Length: 352
Image (cartoon, rainbow, N blue to C red; front, side):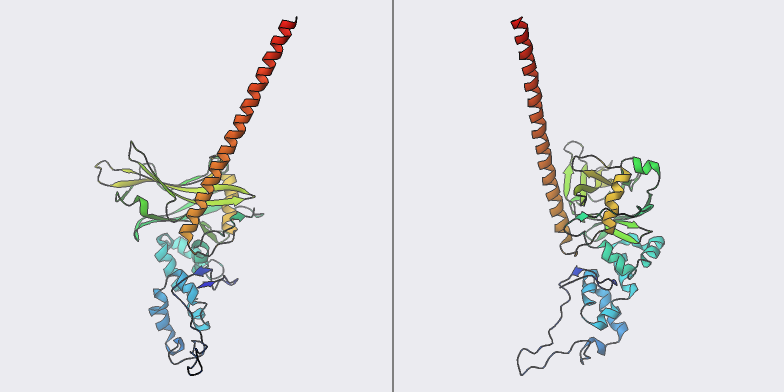
């Protein structure tokens, strides 16, 4: 079932196969029409106490299913607006949001608090991906809420604040590191390919959020000599037709005893199609566009993220090939020009 977002934040744009609506029209003349919850059928939800529906039915749904249920009837719409339901969903999906400071911030999001936050953080950006350059001032602070899971087991979670107003931030290459150089996170050796990562970037002043992760890895590289593994997650952002890769890297290495892997780096960087890392000022243009940009449906978000990354890598490869051809042509022109000058000089000497 698909439904579109409401300006009041009651229904986010999600797809869920869990909730369907039954037609109230009879299949033939001998059948009676079905009664919906709003029509007060004897077996409808109106016959149940709202607390029972809320605690025994709606509390068992995930975010997309609860959003779909809210569009089935007026009764479910009212019951699904309970902030506690959405708060529990956010805490279950993103344990980093359970911190008191972040939990309070989420409750102040306009349009429904945790329900509005979920509609920001769950889906990927809209399919067109061409973000609008914002005319407002960039956020003075960014909050990263990061969670790493393996088969529904939480292995790492952290909330980190990053200031964006200092000259050092704006002029230096943009990079957010979640681990100190000597910090490590023990992990099973066979889990790197199946890690799920969520990196939610939050603007605490504008009350906006966006998930910059592809959720599943877009690439896994293993060093043949050291055995070190680099797992990459990515989102492709575009402003004014310029595309960049917002890359999240998890670097893992073997422990001293050699029986387990250790996460040694969790970082976020932004680079353009030439491989140049953007500084803080340039990165804010794309991050602000992502925070304010239109969100997608949330349907097939993992497949969509990987598809966009593959398309970006292909465009990057074609751009590199065009650049090499252009440079090759310029080299030939320079060689031809030099040869022609040499020949002309020799002709001048022999003609004297």
